[in-house]
Image 1 (tube, rainbow, N blue to C red):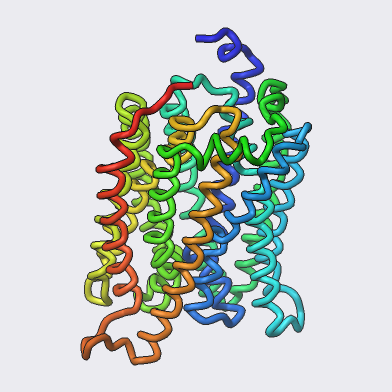
Image 2: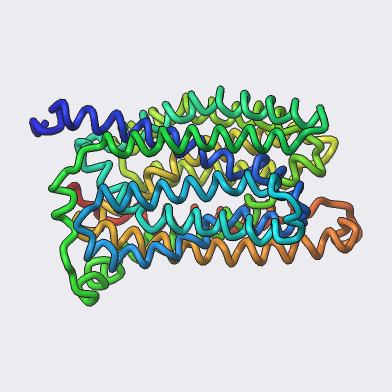
Length: 428
């Protein structure tokens, strides 16, 4: 191992990197699924609109294209990441303050859209730069295991976090003071914002990571990213998966609270099951990916997502326990999808073009995913307006969306096995 990876500075930076990722994971919990659905429903938005807003994270990936010219001119990586990421968390915090603004009325939905969309935009503008900066303190031969360990820490602490915040929010709602619950969440977000800022400051500057942002010409960027056939296949794979995922997942939050009648606290217990399963299997999946390939780890995640969507097709009021199967399978699946999606870029693109390559891949996938959520919203509205009848049978719109996601995910799995997994990879 290179001596710098065992130095105190690199060890401290890796620890701070883990803490920051954990704090950011907590924030992501509060702006997704049941928490966000409860907030948006409270300010008067429809199920289909909530599903679209919940998918804004996907559309915000488009802004990663702007990170390409930013990376070419960015000479102070740490300073810029701290600024953009901190502003992102503050916008998410403001989202929970919206119901507390007197007389806001219909403007609440507009403000929520603004806060969530720009929060994700600021986050994703520097996401790839941050990922490369943080990973520069990690031994390249141990990225899979480090990613798994980092995720396990987030998941384990996130279990207690979601249960605590979920049940306290439920108590506020039972007492008829849901706005007090939103104030409580806003305070928690403020604490997380402070932890996020401090941990970012503690990560080392790492001149090597900064120096790697060379001023490449656009023609060079295109040649060394989308000009590589193997990486183009990764883009296709990622885009297909984002379409399959966002066609349905953004609409599951309201499904749990409205049709299935689960409380926020109960949903967090269900989410805990998914997080615990993901915690137990993250490291084995990380080792599996290091030992075989990142593509194989991704394939494992895709297979589990197919199982999740299959379970989602059969969830009704009488079989609502299947939401546990859906949540567990989807949770473990992301252990195979998340880190491997990023690390796979290293397999086909030179390190100096990583930020640009990842930005292109994420942007294309993000736009496709958001468009899929818009189409899913139309399908859901059509089914609900028809009295939840499809071909004369009573079904929930979310069941139909999961069925379509299942078919699309099977197509991604076949493409990944037959094309991406057979490509030659490079170690760097």
